[in-house]
Image (tube, rainbow, N blue to C red):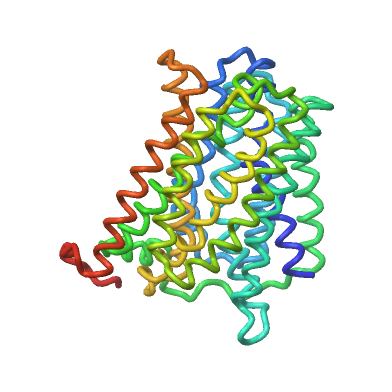
Length: 390
């Protein structure tokens, strides 16, 4: 029950991040801003996680974990309620930033609590349940949140997310035990020294660049499907579910492939993703083929993530806990860049449909970085001088 309680919290918090893709046009219409401006809400959330994660984790490193996550959950609840009540775009923007600042720190502490309460030898499988909460937020949370937004207004979506987090907070109070705080004398800032290692920096680059392409399409998912392909607004939630199902399939398949041939599978899957994005640009007027390709890009996009996580964990052996935060920060950097670049493409007059080609081009850049990392692993490329992690 302790792990399930934390998993529900992760589900609620992550749904608050992903659901924007389904209600973006509604927010833009209601607050009288452009689609690119509404897309910057994704950028704001990502930047908040990138900055707030290491800073807040460092400042709270010696706090008792259970009271800390309760406070963090309270901030998330207040942030989502403020989003629901936001009278202007500026207030919504600020509420999203406040919510995002505590997200990474909550995840880091939840993982520590889950691992510490697991039976010996079961830490990894226990932590994987928390990660499954993130997967569920895409498969169920984002579509359900979009359904709620379409039926009752986008503000109701944030109220529902706040309600989910309130339930999670009550379950944490009831079932999650307190655990020992961080070891005295250690801090997240000390662990950040691992980033001096060139292998870690390259692993971060692979994650950031490799994911940025697909994130451009995901950020502007709703306007692409309604404005380019011609789906009705109500269909976006269903297609988000299709995307999430593809992501779940791709996650398991990618893990299986990465265990057998890490870099060859990653490069091949990214190449398949780039080709599929070009195909989506070609057939974007067809509803049936686009719906099928939504599943395919979800599967291909998430099939590379297990391998990317493995590279980061392998490179950052001196700080395995930080490795997860580093990978998450790289992903959020990609999300921030994707939202910004997509908005610039639209504002530049190239049209929504061109986002597919831009996404494919950025994915090709991810292939180049992955190939460089692969060649370094094989000794084809001479690595730069490396700094041993502290």
